Image (tube, rainbow, N blue to C red; front, side):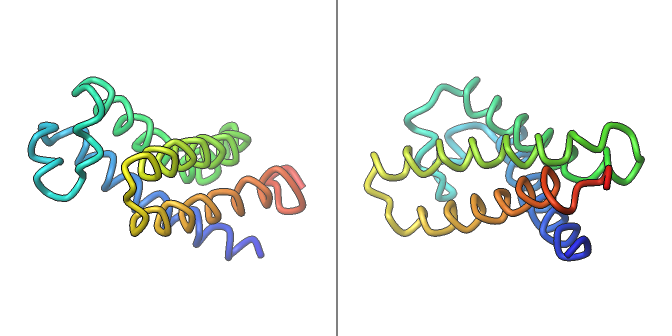
Length: 126
């Protein structure tokens, strides 16, 4: 199970590092034109903040455990992603973008699995 949790964390880290970097480096208008229509409902600063939080969570899923420094940050980063995905689900539901909600739910469940495993029976302290 430890290996499964590492794989899930790695997949989440890659996905959120890429998505967050895109939000940090692209103007809001370009993001909206590329399929992220939800950005129209947020200020450019808020879009950048979401991107920064995603990049920080991606780093927090891997680096603390890999370096053995404050590995409790791993489940906390995953918990942060659960909260971000809850916000994404609400945003897409309000915009009636049902097709995107499925992806958000899958990402939420994967992040929740890391929270459960790393705070619970497969924590780095045990």
